[in-house]
Length: 481
Picture 1: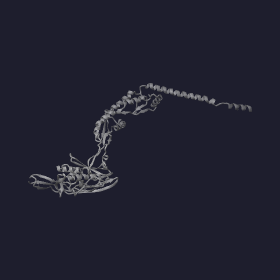
Picture 2: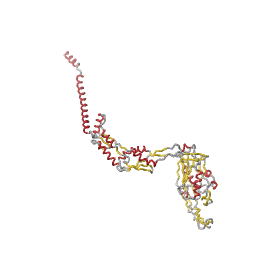
Picture 3: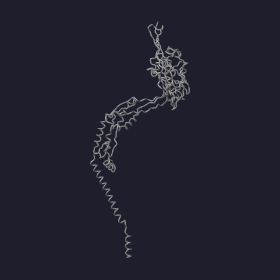
Picture 4: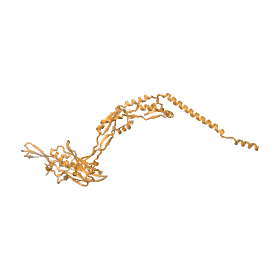
């Protein structure tokens, strides 16, 4: 019994498990290979079948713009988008730049779906040179769908041609600065200015970006598109043209002197010209009387009406107060501290032609003056311009901006009193029957306005101007000669 048992155990030890497992492994391997090959042949057969059935059609599941074109021909796809283009061809495009605008249509710009390209792209899905990629795309489209992005186009040449005339209206050449300083006065001055031009490249980019949105709108729309403008810089800026540090406009003032007699018009132009080009140094107190000099017939002034001794009479330099009033307004606007200012005795109609009362300044060389101090830390240049067509005087103050912000209240009129009755007085120098008005009526009033100037958030000036105007009587001279 003992020997038999030993023999049995010995035989069991000689059994090799690999001989039992390997056949199963081999069978599984070849079964897997067969399955893969079978699947490959099945897929290939299905792909070949699809190729035959859809040889001239878009494969199923290919969509563009949420439209499924599976089973449709390339010609159908192209015609579909061509019809969509026909519907939107009458859409109007209005290009806007401020008050300037121009209109065109989608048809004139050849704007629409790129129908030929979209049809080609739809047909190309699953038809590349890579068969494995084709099989993947075909079954992906069939099972899950393949979405192609819509393609749009417009004619760049048509857009450029259309914008050419528009561009002429908006184009401005940059202006180089001119500056000449002689004997302490600027004799030639022209500030530089930037030019502008239509940015056609930016318009094209904007149009490309907005086309998908435009196609989502109902047909027959009027679409407005802003026109971007690009800045053209001058070669010589105002800052580069001079060594005085003058580079930009810091304040302006205007007034009208319409209905003035010829002598007054002449005097306004003459006085303005003598202030034109004056440079005020940093920390200098400017005196209008000093800068203007003598006002008399000896210095070229003509006779015009002035206020003297409580009357309006003819005198040398009538109209100079038009110039001081305009400069007063420029100083206010520039935020500069005014150290001396006097209102007129009565409300002068000239100074209310383009604004409220109370913003005037009278001068009488050399005793009544208009003064201000240059606290900007830079030179200030005075420029005066007279528009002869509308009789408007403008003061421009150039220098360097230093962060000043000006707030002015609207003048308030109180204590208004009526003008005295009209007075007629005999004048033996006038022929009998001739009547001539030499003074004009004006109501008396108190006028107040305030000005606050801030610099970098800090208040540096807070003041109130009060003008007390007397009621003024109209006077007519009656000829007795």
